[in-house]
Length: 232
Image 1 (cartoon, rainbow, N blue to C red):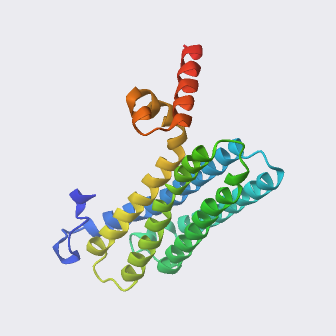
Image 2 (image 1 turned 135 degrees about the vertical axis):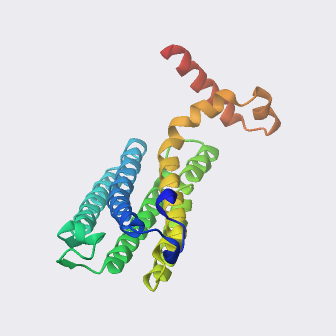
Image 3 (image 1 turned 60 degrees about the vertical axis):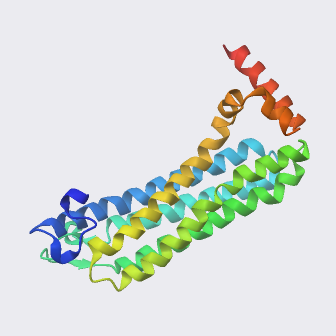
């Protein structure tokens, strides 16, 4: 995007670069909604593997339905925010457009609510898990990594509010892009953490567990090692 002027002031752009930037904004906006929704559905499905309680499963499926339906609605609204669609990046095309800023605020507000629910639900049930207290803390920390995405979503909304009154979109949208990247990256990290736990344990030196006197981790490490050997 920088090759076509993204990150430059509007008055420094060459002829036609604004149109190309707006076209990429459109593609990024629609892709963002899809990717974010898929990440959050993946997190809910991971929760379902951990918590066997009927009440939690009901809450999880309800949350999943909310995520899918709300993100689908915002996705369709974003795709058809201008009609005909090319009017989004070329206002010379006759047609009409929705309030794109209002749509972006609705998307961010919806994402904040989803993140809050994704953080609260597992915290309410961690105490019921039949595992040592130390490992409960570890599980809680793994879930809490998602708070980075929650914070990034809130900060992103702040920059969107500033962007609403912007007369220099290719310059002012840089901060929004940065925080959008952080939000998505933290979501991917939250989903992948459970999968890489065994990898991290395998590469930690043996004396690390002794040094910090965490016997429950040694047990977990031995279990993971035996599991890897059996699969091999």
